[in-house]
Length: 234
Image: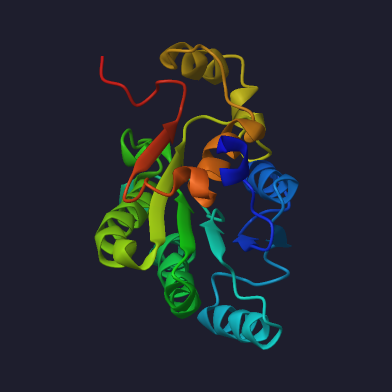
Protein backbone atom coordinates (compact mmCIF):
# COMPACT_ATOMS: atom_id res chain seq x y z
CA UNK A 1 0.00 0.00 0.00
CA UNK A 2 2.74 2.49 0.84
CA UNK A 3 4.51 1.83 -2.46
CA UNK A 4 1.30 2.56 -4.34
CA UNK A 5 0.98 5.94 -2.65
CA UNK A 6 4.19 7.09 -4.37
CA UNK A 7 2.78 6.26 -7.81
CA UNK A 8 2.43 9.38 -9.97
CA UNK A 9 1.06 7.73 -13.09
CA UNK A 10 -1.24 10.09 -14.98
CA UNK A 11 0.13 13.20 -13.26
CA UNK A 12 1.78 16.09 -15.11
CA UNK A 13 4.70 17.67 -13.23
CA UNK A 14 6.40 20.93 -14.12
CA UNK A 15 9.81 21.33 -12.49
CA UNK A 16 11.42 24.68 -13.23
CA UNK A 17 15.17 24.68 -13.72
CA UNK A 18 15.08 20.93 -14.33
CA UNK A 19 17.80 20.35 -16.90
CA UNK A 20 20.58 20.21 -14.30
CA UNK A 21 21.33 20.08 -10.59
CA UNK A 22 18.63 19.68 -7.96
CA UNK A 23 15.84 20.34 -10.44
CA UNK A 24 17.01 17.57 -12.76
CA UNK A 25 17.29 15.10 -9.87
CA UNK A 26 13.74 15.95 -8.74
CA UNK A 27 12.42 15.66 -12.29
CA UNK A 28 14.14 12.29 -12.72
CA UNK A 29 12.56 10.98 -9.50
CA UNK A 30 9.05 12.11 -10.42
CA UNK A 31 9.49 10.61 -13.87
CA UNK A 32 10.72 7.32 -12.40
CA UNK A 33 7.50 7.08 -10.40
CA UNK A 34 5.26 7.65 -13.39
CA UNK A 35 4.75 11.39 -13.82
CA UNK A 36 4.93 13.13 -17.17
CA UNK A 37 7.68 15.66 -16.39
CA UNK A 38 7.90 18.96 -18.23
CA UNK A 39 11.58 19.95 -18.35
CA UNK A 40 12.21 23.67 -18.02
CA UNK A 41 15.12 26.06 -18.49
CA UNK A 42 15.42 29.68 -19.56
CA UNK A 43 15.17 28.71 -23.25
CA UNK A 44 11.78 27.14 -22.56
CA UNK A 45 10.51 30.04 -20.46
CA UNK A 46 12.48 32.96 -19.06
CA UNK A 47 11.09 33.49 -15.56
CA UNK A 48 12.55 37.00 -15.46
CA UNK A 49 9.99 37.96 -18.13
CA UNK A 50 6.39 37.99 -16.83
CA UNK A 51 5.04 37.94 -20.40
CA UNK A 52 7.00 34.76 -21.13
CA UNK A 53 5.41 33.04 -18.14
CA UNK A 54 1.92 33.96 -19.36
CA UNK A 55 2.67 32.72 -22.88
CA UNK A 56 4.19 29.47 -21.64
CA UNK A 57 1.20 28.61 -19.47
CA UNK A 58 -1.24 29.53 -22.22
CA UNK A 59 0.56 26.98 -24.37
CA UNK A 60 0.38 24.34 -21.64
CA UNK A 61 -3.35 24.94 -21.21
CA UNK A 62 -3.95 24.71 -24.96
CA UNK A 63 -2.14 21.36 -25.02
CA UNK A 64 -4.00 20.05 -21.96
CA UNK A 65 -0.75 19.96 -20.03
CA UNK A 66 -1.27 22.30 -17.10
CA UNK A 67 0.62 20.72 -14.20
CA UNK A 68 -0.90 18.70 -11.39
CA UNK A 69 2.46 19.09 -9.62
CA UNK A 70 4.48 22.29 -9.75
CA UNK A 71 8.00 22.37 -8.33
CA UNK A 72 9.31 25.95 -8.36
CA UNK A 73 13.01 25.16 -8.29
CA UNK A 74 14.64 27.71 -10.61
CA UNK A 75 16.28 30.68 -8.93
CA UNK A 76 19.09 33.16 -9.39
CA UNK A 77 21.56 34.56 -6.89
CA UNK A 78 24.29 37.17 -6.89
CA UNK A 79 27.00 37.34 -4.24
CA UNK A 80 27.19 41.08 -3.65
CA UNK A 81 27.27 42.94 -0.31
CA UNK A 82 23.86 44.44 0.42
CA UNK A 83 25.33 47.97 0.55
CA UNK A 84 26.42 47.65 -3.07
CA UNK A 85 23.57 45.56 -4.45
CA UNK A 86 22.25 47.09 -7.71
CA UNK A 87 18.52 47.73 -7.74
CA UNK A 88 18.08 46.20 -11.19
CA UNK A 89 19.68 42.96 -9.97
CA UNK A 90 17.49 43.01 -6.84
CA UNK A 91 14.38 43.42 -9.01
CA UNK A 92 15.48 40.48 -11.19
CA UNK A 93 16.03 38.21 -8.18
CA UNK A 94 12.65 39.21 -6.77
CA UNK A 95 10.97 38.44 -10.09
CA UNK A 96 12.62 35.07 -10.73
CA UNK A 97 12.73 33.78 -7.16
CA UNK A 98 9.41 35.04 -5.82
CA UNK A 99 7.03 36.76 -8.23
CA UNK A 100 7.36 34.02 -10.85
CA UNK A 101 6.50 31.44 -8.19
CA UNK A 102 3.42 33.39 -7.13
CA UNK A 103 2.22 33.76 -10.71
CA UNK A 104 2.78 30.08 -11.55
CA UNK A 105 0.87 29.08 -8.42
CA UNK A 106 -2.02 31.27 -9.57
CA UNK A 107 -1.97 29.79 -13.06
CA UNK A 108 -2.02 26.19 -11.75
CA UNK A 109 -4.64 26.73 -9.08
CA UNK A 110 -7.88 26.51 -11.09
CA UNK A 111 -7.08 23.05 -12.46
CA UNK A 112 -5.94 21.75 -9.08
CA UNK A 113 -9.04 23.11 -7.36
CA UNK A 114 -11.38 21.63 -9.96
CA UNK A 115 -9.89 18.15 -9.65
CA UNK A 116 -9.49 18.36 -5.85
CA UNK A 117 -5.80 17.39 -6.09
CA UNK A 118 -2.62 19.38 -6.53
CA UNK A 119 0.93 19.80 -5.29
CA UNK A 120 2.65 23.18 -5.05
CA UNK A 121 6.29 22.91 -3.97
CA UNK A 122 8.98 25.55 -3.74
CA UNK A 123 12.66 24.77 -3.49
CA UNK A 124 13.96 27.16 -0.87
CA UNK A 125 17.40 27.51 0.67
CA UNK A 126 19.14 27.15 4.00
CA UNK A 127 19.77 30.89 3.54
CA UNK A 128 16.21 31.36 4.84
CA UNK A 129 17.58 30.36 8.25
CA UNK A 130 21.26 31.30 7.91
CA UNK A 131 21.71 34.09 5.34
CA UNK A 132 25.09 34.26 3.65
CA UNK A 133 26.53 37.77 4.30
CA UNK A 134 26.82 38.46 0.57
CA UNK A 135 23.47 36.94 -0.41
CA UNK A 136 21.05 38.91 1.74
CA UNK A 137 18.76 39.69 -1.20
CA UNK A 138 18.65 36.06 -2.30
CA UNK A 139 17.91 34.98 1.28
CA UNK A 140 15.11 37.52 1.51
CA UNK A 141 13.45 36.23 -1.68
CA UNK A 142 13.62 32.68 -0.34
CA UNK A 143 12.11 33.77 2.97
CA UNK A 144 9.31 35.40 1.00
CA UNK A 145 8.67 32.10 -0.78
CA UNK A 146 8.48 30.27 2.53
CA UNK A 147 6.00 32.82 3.88
CA UNK A 148 3.91 32.44 0.74
CA UNK A 149 3.81 28.67 1.28
CA UNK A 150 2.47 29.07 4.81
CA UNK A 151 -0.01 31.72 3.75
CA UNK A 152 -1.52 29.70 0.92
CA UNK A 153 -1.38 26.23 2.49
CA UNK A 154 -4.20 26.78 5.00
CA UNK A 155 -6.47 28.29 2.36
CA UNK A 156 -6.19 25.49 -0.20
CA UNK A 157 -5.93 22.47 2.12
CA UNK A 158 -9.69 21.72 2.00
CA UNK A 159 -9.37 21.46 -1.80
CA UNK A 160 -6.88 18.58 -1.75
CA UNK A 161 -3.94 20.84 -2.57
CA UNK A 162 -0.75 20.76 -0.50
CA UNK A 163 1.83 23.54 -0.48
CA UNK A 164 5.32 22.93 0.88
CA UNK A 165 8.85 24.26 0.99
CA UNK A 166 11.74 21.88 0.27
CA UNK A 167 14.79 23.59 1.72
CA UNK A 168 18.27 22.44 0.58
CA UNK A 169 21.51 23.16 2.36
CA UNK A 170 24.93 23.08 0.70
CA UNK A 171 24.63 20.98 -2.44
CA UNK A 172 27.49 20.11 -4.73
CA UNK A 173 25.96 21.36 -7.97
CA UNK A 174 27.29 23.24 -11.00
CA UNK A 175 26.43 26.49 -9.24
CA UNK A 176 28.53 25.71 -6.17
CA UNK A 177 31.35 23.49 -7.43
CA UNK A 178 33.87 26.27 -7.97
CA UNK A 179 33.53 27.89 -4.56
CA UNK A 180 33.39 24.54 -2.74
CA UNK A 181 36.63 23.53 -4.48
CA UNK A 182 38.43 26.46 -2.86
CA UNK A 183 41.02 24.97 -0.46
CA UNK A 184 40.17 27.47 2.29
CA UNK A 185 36.45 28.12 1.84
CA UNK A 186 35.41 24.53 1.05
CA UNK A 187 36.69 22.86 4.24
CA UNK A 188 35.32 25.74 6.32
CA UNK A 189 31.83 25.20 4.92
CA UNK A 190 32.01 21.43 5.33
CA UNK A 191 33.12 21.79 8.95
CA UNK A 192 30.00 23.87 9.69
CA UNK A 193 27.69 21.09 8.49
CA UNK A 194 26.95 18.59 11.28
CA UNK A 195 27.14 15.69 8.80
CA UNK A 196 30.51 17.05 7.57
CA UNK A 197 29.57 16.43 3.96
CA UNK A 198 27.94 18.21 1.05
CA UNK A 199 24.67 17.00 -0.43
CA UNK A 200 24.36 15.71 -3.96
CA UNK A 201 21.38 16.63 -6.19
CA UNK A 202 19.71 13.26 -5.71
CA UNK A 203 19.59 13.86 -1.94
CA UNK A 204 16.65 16.21 -2.58
CA UNK A 205 14.76 13.75 -4.76
CA UNK A 206 13.24 11.55 -2.05
CA UNK A 207 11.77 14.46 -0.11
CA UNK A 208 10.37 15.95 -3.31
CA UNK A 209 8.77 12.63 -4.26
CA UNK A 210 7.15 12.41 -0.82
CA UNK A 211 5.70 15.93 -1.08
CA UNK A 212 4.53 15.38 -4.67
CA UNK A 213 2.73 12.09 -4.05
CA UNK A 214 -0.16 10.75 -2.00
CA UNK A 215 2.41 9.40 0.45
CA UNK A 216 2.76 13.01 1.62
CA UNK A 217 -0.91 13.97 1.39
CA UNK A 218 -1.05 15.03 5.06
CA UNK A 219 1.98 17.33 4.85
CA UNK A 220 1.21 20.94 4.03
CA UNK A 221 2.58 24.34 4.99
CA UNK A 222 5.82 22.62 5.98
CA UNK A 223 9.47 23.40 5.44
CA UNK A 224 11.46 20.21 4.93
CA UNK A 225 15.15 20.84 5.59
CA UNK A 226 17.57 18.80 3.48
CA UNK A 227 20.73 20.37 4.86
CA UNK A 228 22.68 17.80 6.85
CA UNK A 229 21.76 19.66 10.03
CA UNK A 230 23.25 23.00 8.94
CA UNK A 231 20.23 25.00 10.11
CA UNK A 232 20.24 23.45 13.58
CA UNK A 233 21.13 25.80 16.45
CA UNK A 234 24.41 25.39 18.25
